[in-house]
Length: 124
Image 1 (tube, rainbow, N blue to C red):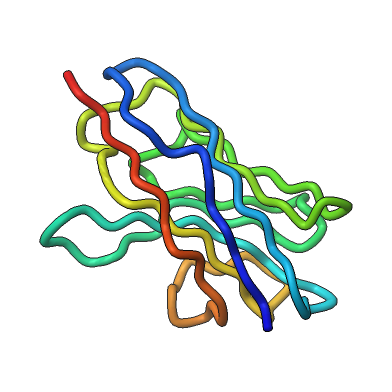
Image 2 (cartoon, rainbow, N blue to C red):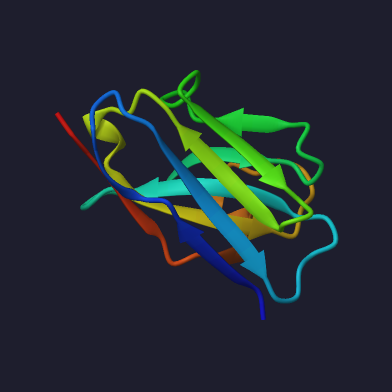
């Protein structure tokens, strides 16, 4: 049973930074790409960032390019999302996900496992 546990969310002011972490445990894929998605109240889940198994390839949503950085530590089975220059519109629940595919995946349907989410609230 694969489990993903996110942490690091919180309540910050616009311009502040947060780092989200997602620890993967249980049976894991030998080559697993990871992703972060967000969902604001009343909206559909949206892609934020993804990273390939080896960590060399990353892809970001246009809305977070230059502000967010996804990274991973395979020795710790952990993926991170460094969020800088946060904006009010970044407020959402953030979910990490694991895919059986090794390459980066922007489509949520290509992910097999999801965490429970961590809330990020940015105030003006």
